[in-house]
Amino acid sequence: MNEKAMRKHRWQSGIFLLIILVLTYLSSAITKFNFVEGMATIPEAIGWIFSNLMVTQESLDKLPKILEKLAETIFMSIAATTTAAIVSLFLGVFGSKTTKVNNFLSIFARFVASVSRNIPVVAWSLILLISFGQNSVTGFLALFAGTVGFLTRAFIESIDEASQSSVEALTATGATYFQVVSKAVIPQCLPQMVSWVLFMVETNIRNATLVGILTGTGIGYTFDMYYKLLNYNAVALVTLCIVITVIIVDLISNHVRKVIL
Amino acid sequence: MSLLKVEGLGKSYTADKQILKNINFDIKQGEFISIIGPSGAGKSTMLRCINRMVDFQEGKITFNHQDVGSLNKKELRNLRTNIGMVFQHYNLVPRLTVLENVLHGRFGYKTTLQGILGRYTEAEKEHAFYLLEKMGIHEHAYKRCNQLSGGQQQRVGICRALIQEPQLILCDEPIASLDPNSSKIIMDHLKSISTEMGITCLVNLHQVDVAQQYSDRIIGLNNGEVVFNGKGHELSEEKIHKIYGTQTKQLIIA
Image 1 (cartoon, each protein chain N blue to C red):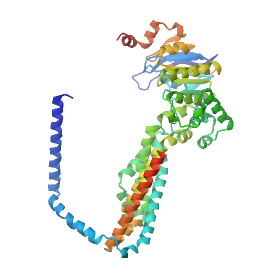
Image 2 (image 1 turned 60 degrees about the horizontal axis):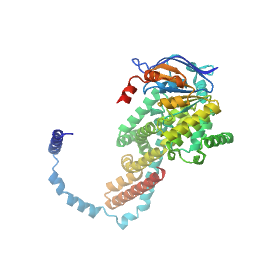
Image 3 (image 1 turned 120 degrees about the vertical axis):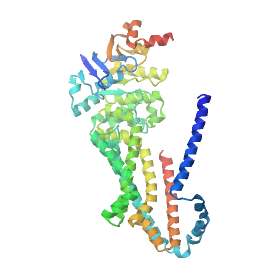
Image 4 (image 1 turned 60 degrees about the vertical axis):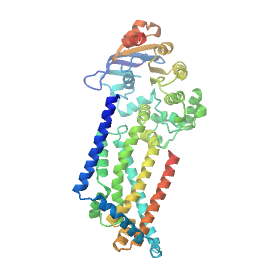
């Protein structure tokens, strides 16, 4: 790059920054969002949080009930993720370029993945709520649907990336399709796949809270109930429980990842 | 008696470019044949036509009295079991052990379920160890393949081909990613396979001198056509020029 080009490059960066500033100003003007006013309410909001969202002795009495619901949510997330992983494994194998059986199945797998991934989990919950009613099956299915899409996509990419050469070699020895998949593709992609599944378990525990609020199941329902009863101390306890759980799951999955990779 | 007969073989991936044009040759049992030619001449494609890893449109390939082009799925599997293949990048499953990779060569003889469950007989395991010992890598049998050097991995690849008990081994540039020392070891092993075990070897090579030193016969390929087919000492300066075109000469002068 010569001097002239460099100077031009710097000019471009300046203009780019200016455009972003203008865009920010215009957006806040259109939406009537006042930055200064917004900032001014922060101290008050923090004050409210500290005076209301405190875990008290009284709310601690509700802990066993909350933990029970929390356990239900965790198990629901794990069940949704693992069942989705099994379905995604097949879709991933059929969808990948290296291991596809035929074009129809490949396109079908990619289509299923893209549909289920592009509908947000919130929308899934609301759609399924209408058809399945307010129970934990709805929550399970909502998480399952979102997870299948994401995991299929991730699995297709892992398979495409990792196994082309050994698939060719095993096919050349006269191995059958399922022998090739089980002995060349799966062993090679397994660490990455497990890693993606763990990531989805974490994400689903977080999502389960939101899905629970919408579908009236698990910890999300508990949260929603106390919130509507204006029992903010209990709300604080529920939130704390969720945060601690997510951190613990995060630590466990990081450790597992370190061991397998 | 010829083991492999190729007549009028033609192949194109796209309508406007013909990769292979009217290729004819004959290979006898136990011969060691090198195929040389510039990159993109169609060497790899030709090798893959023989075990139908690539489907061809024109011509006829006869292997062991079988018409390769007309085989159904089951017969094709049987054919591939009889033909071993060795690759430039070894194409092992890196996370599995050396022993497992060698035993993968037995899949052609097994049912799908036996393969998935990894049921190998004692005789097969002993054979695997015998081959690993012959290649001098038996002490690595339980190591993961990605812990081995390139030359060692290629020897695992050869073991995998040999355990198939094939009549023909196809080698797609087996030494192109190896240093001179490892290359010599691999070529010596391949040579002894053809002389001692009587297995025919068809080897794609980039090095003319290596081809001349090891082969019983050399086939020169340029732009999808056979331009030379003869013994190593018959390969004159002029013939080499014909195979590689003008590029080599320019490279040497420059």
